[in-house]
Image (cartoon, rainbow, N blue to C red; front, side):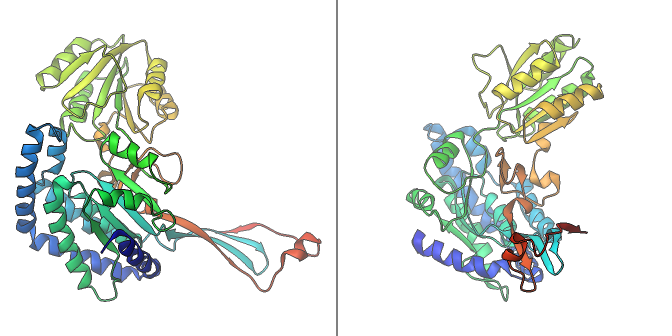
Length: 416
């Protein structure tokens, strides 16, 4: 099918998904998890082919080592991928939840109710585990989804999609067309032109990809262009804690968008040189006084800078950061509170690694991505971020003219 046909089928599916029973959605997810578990070797074999081809792309400079690292699907990623689906099953259904109930007048009741967004368009690079993560969240939140992965992962993407589709078809009552995958580069432009038919675009990939999408569609875009995360080490910080957190935030997964890129150190912190030495010993390249601080290394490289104190840290982060995730290491609760209140980021942490900024670790089951937007959803976007809301009003024949003419008065009484 071409994009127009896929979008048409997805829109048919979204109507059925909106009112789909929770039990059917959970049965579909369980079938997907079991089918992935049963076909792990098939997925590994497909991923092996992609990695062999990608190695040539790395050597020719067409893709980066960071992209190659995201492409590799190992046992840990497979385990998390499957567990993520089971975690989504355990979560409360986010659809048709009552946000508030208000009595406008006797017998005139207003309710604010959660509802699916509709059709999601997900465009991502490498990371084939994204398919199962996003598909499971879309299914549970009652959304249809159209996925477009990077060509470097075509074999793995196709294998996982085939396994998911097979499981969904075996689930009685689950609609066709709910989960879709497209492959060609031209499909991206076609997806971006489907305003009014695709309700939300979520990009996951490089700064270049995200900016291209933001600049070439009228469809709302949810996500972040870059992950420039900071750690500020306060004067009162414990050295061992600072060392442990900084190393984890860079080494644990250097290419992740929540890996630290800049460490700011209070000028009166006694262990600056010792910390720098510890980072270097952990095979981290430390750059002091770089030409620019708004750079995402996506590698075992970070910037390090001495600063005057808390206020400069906040100003620096708000100026050069990407509003993703930033952390303070301190034993001063007042400074921590000031930092967390005044740093304008989706995630602000105290004495914790920036790598905790993740839907799986937040208990969302999985995430469709991390958003630095100021509207709708921010931070790791899980089930709740894939729902919007509608207003339901139930009356007994009331008309506005009675209230305009003063024959009746609105009460606006909230009902708990």
